[in-house]
Amino acid sequence: MSKDRILMAHGSGGLMSQRLIEGLFKEHWHNEYLDQMLDGAVLNVPAGRIAMSTDSFVITPIFFPGGDIGKLAVCGTVNDLLACGAKPMYLTVGMIIEEGLDMEELRRIVASMAETARQAGVSIVSGDTKVVEKGSADKIFINTTGIGHVAEGVDYRPARMQEGDTVIVTGFVGDHGLSVLAQREGLRFSTLALSDCAALVEIAEIAASYGDRVRCMRDPTRGGLATVLNELAGQAGRSIVVREQDIPVSPVVQGACDMLGMDPLYMANEGKFVIVVDESAAESLLDKIQGTPTGQNARIIGSVSQAGRANVRIVTPLGAERILGMLEGEHLPRIC
Image (cartoon, rainbow, N blue to C red; front, side):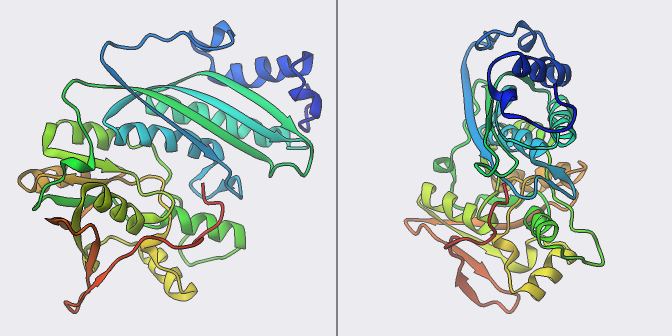
């Protein structure tokens, strides 16, 4: 195996491919399923329902404050499964690697995925690697597919939202989008812009303890908080009203957005949930979420309103009300 760069021969399926798999991927990801080195993985899955999710990650740059493309790929799919009410169990990984990628960068990414998967309690059980000619990709693209088990009685769907339900966001919004933008453009702020990239297993476990009082969860990634709220409203056929002053935004994100003419409500997140919960359980759920490392800045931001008006309205600090629309066009390119 070349010690310096990825070569086309690493994707040939021959000896160099095997050395890459054995000397890098298997070394970091080994488990009882992957170690069998079959064409696929034969998995033990509990009886009942499963959730599946797949996502592709094409971010630039591939390393940023608070994370990297590998951590992002694991967290993104794990959080999608958690938002479905599933306990994540298994991941598959597909990599498209550009010829010439520094081998040490690939090793950092693979190690990051291994550590993130370990923390999230999932196993990487199967995968695929392709190498393309230099100029045909941007360093590395990663696809992850996840499988999780959905316990009996769990039903997280926007259709379950009811008038009066409370809307919670589990922390500052816009951190990931600003971190990637700052790294890509060489922007510097008095406080480092850190991505919120994290697998939200602990928050999901807390939410699960509230049973059917939790109506649904969603992770506001591309398009940000505003877009996800509109998706929920549209799928539920209900209106959502949020209070601008209650939406948590860190000083560094707010300051940067003011300077750059951007809106933090449309900036990407990779470690947040929007949770819609029965009003009677909202304060208790919020208190428990705020006791977690990733949920310290969680806030109640609004409520579900009447049926038949599928929109999102935001109340300004002066009491005025306006429609909060979905993201139109491209806000930040290549943020996940």
